[in-house]
Length: 113
Image (cartoon, rainbow, N blue to C red; front, side):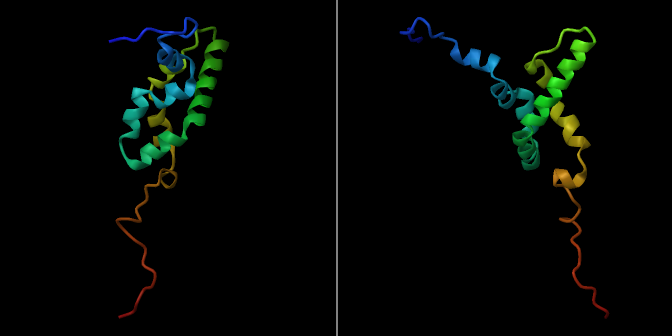
């Protein structure tokens, strides 16, 4: 059942237009990003906080393509290249929150027996 649109200036495919035009909606609604974020709580936290860095990477890729005389890709196409895995794997272990301390805790005191 579809509802009739009572406002002629208001498009019935409003949500589709939002997803197409709004970069944060594209980012947080990206199937590739959502599947990346479901890997672990650390990845989910990284995904939720990395929007600005990923968008800056997109702008850099767009500028490089324009300087090379190529057609720049859309933000959705850029997100399909899975920029999270590359950035996340290049982070040092400490920044990812993965340390060996859980399996091998430091001893505070060494006792002489």
